[in-house]
Length: 360
Image (tube, rainbow, N blue to C red; front, side, top):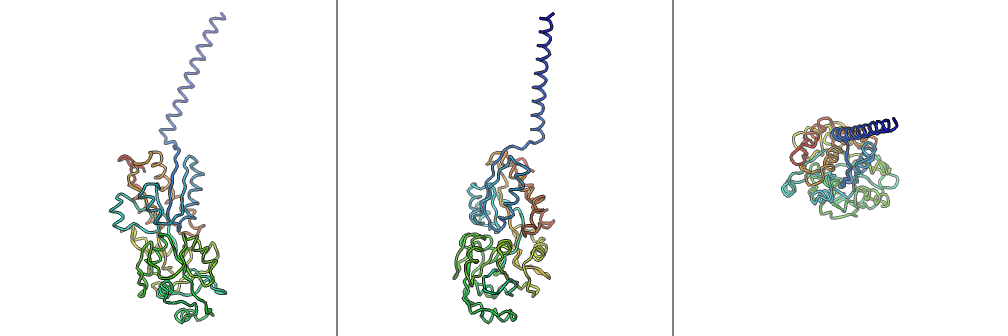
């Protein structure tokens, strides 16, 4: 009886082990078939303009998807573009859309609008807070070195309520290849009749101190009495640096705020529906802040050159930022994408492929 029972027990145990193995195998198959997330490490970099928001996105996304590790280096739009071209960055941030010549030399790159913002003219003038009035022509003359004193007649004429000091103006501008520079100079090229330096991620500045990144401009400005510089709204507001009201196309001196910047991007949204790379500075409209821009994620359409798990992770992260990620924008002083621009971003992201198969 003992031997018989022993054999029966062994048989039952054997069946139980097989059952456990089959169940485990089934669970593994199920989780894989349901798209269980594979580990992926994503390296990206570029524009400093959206860096505070991108950092927040990376942090929040990692909480939801701990298997996906993302790093974003704030190195400027130009360096971001070059990193993408060399494929050392898996995607790049750029405030400046690629030129036709860059698109021809590096085919297959998509532009994904991710957020927008305002470029402010900030200054460090003793006893002068935010709200100084400036026009496009006055800004142009300051940054070209044609106006060199803060009490110059052209500045005083549009600021009758201010007692402006006899203080030298010190221009602070970007030293690196910068999408913020592109947005700022594109505005001056569009809005000022006296601007002669053209537009781009770099221009040949005749005057000024160079600083790297929006954070570099902010830091230099804080340490330079008489200084004036252009930087993204978040960096000025977050560092309590005074900034100007700028006259818009409707003839209004408009303070950069989340509301006035959002109004500009809403007015500009139809342009992106026609051409995602369209310039959107100096839009008309009451209460519209004129130096407002969109900023982009640049990514190759065909991601077959990287591991498939990474390609899927890149696609999923970019889809998340234009949807759920927008909920973090306004707390960091970036406007949410207008719904029509989200539609543009969705259409572009749906072009992402891996070995000919869509990733989304």
